[in-house]
Image (cartoon, rainbow, N blue to C red; front, side):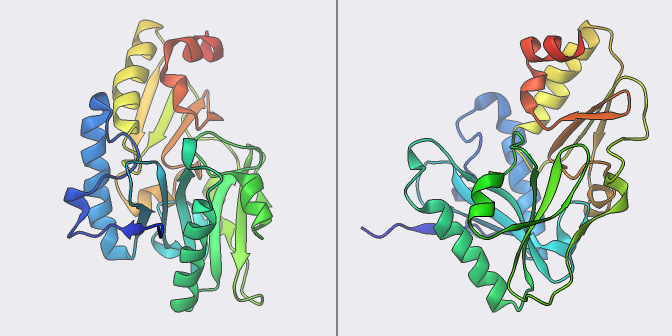
Amino acid sequence: METKYITLTKENIDAEHICCAFSDKKCSEGYELKKAWLKKEFDNGYVFRRLDARAKVFMEYVPAEKAWIPVDAPGYLMINCFWVSGQYKGNGHAKALLKSAIDDAVAQGKSGLVTVVGTKKFHFMSDTKWLLRQGFETIETLPNGFSLLVLKIDAAAQNPSFKECVKSGECEEKEGLVVYYTNRCPFTDYYVNGSLWLLAQENNIPLKIIKLETMEQAQASPSPATIFSVFYNGKFVTTDMSICVKSRFTKIFL
C-alpha cells in the first residue's frame, strides 16, 4: 500500500492533528495556539506536511524571509520542525519528506534549503548527523552550539548566515532566568507559563518570560532556537524543555 502524506491548509487543519501533543490534555491550550499560529503563517507560504496517521512524522518549512528564525537566507526555504519518531523510524519517511521539500524548492525556483541545528544534537531540533548524510553542509557555527546547514540547489547562490543578534550567545538581561518562546510548538505555553514559572517562584530565582509574538521579534531574538531558549545570567543554557521539570531544573540551577 502506498504511503500517504497530507499537507495541512486553512481548510483542513481544524479536522487534522498536528503530530505533537494531540493527546496531551495539559497542553491542549498550547495545541490550539499552535494551530492558530499555523493558520496565520499559511499566508506566508508555510508548509506543514505529515504522514496520514496518528504519528509524529512531519516536516515544516517556509520561505526563509518569512521564517521566525534570526537567519539571513533570501531565496531559500527554511526547514523548521522535522521529526520521525518511534516505530516510524527506518521506513523512509524522513527521506520522503525531505524530497518533497526539495521538490517544492525546485518548483519555486529557490536556491536551496537551510536549517538551524545543534552542532551536537540539541533537544527539539533536527538530527544534525542525518541531515549531513543527506548532503547538507555546515556553513556557520556559533560558540553556544548552534550550526547553520544548507543544501544548495543553485551552487552559485550566496550562503545564508546567522543574524548578528545571535552571534554573542548572550541576551540583554544579565540577572536570573530569561526564557524566549513562541507558539511554534504546542508544548511551550504549558511548560513555560506553568512548570517553569512555578519552579522559579519556589526557588526564588528571578524569571523573565519573553514571548515572541511576531516574525520581526523572532528574527531579532538572541537565540536561533525561537521555539524555546533559556538563558541564565545572560548566558545561553539550553533548548531542552525538560528543564521545566523539577529534577532537571534542580540539577542545573540549584
